Length: 67
Image (cartoon, rainbow, N blue to C red; front, side, top):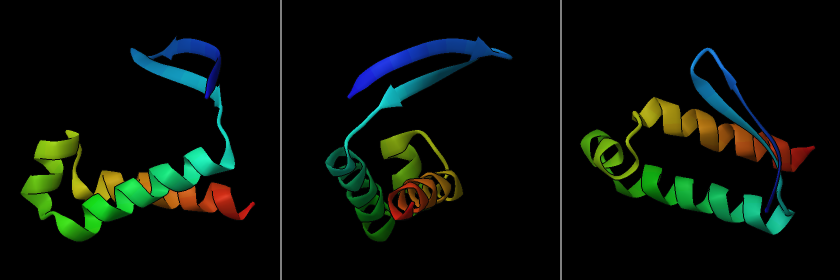
């Protein structure tokens, strides 16, 4: 993974990165594992995000891999 650019928009830090397909597949697998094996409270405790947020991120990664 390589960072190409970093910027802040409305107090949110955004990163533009270059990642390999293998890395994206690993991130997708890890998020799916968490979603399939932890309840709402477990997801929040482990990831610091709501289940719906993590699901959206996982779907985004999956969609990137389909392109």
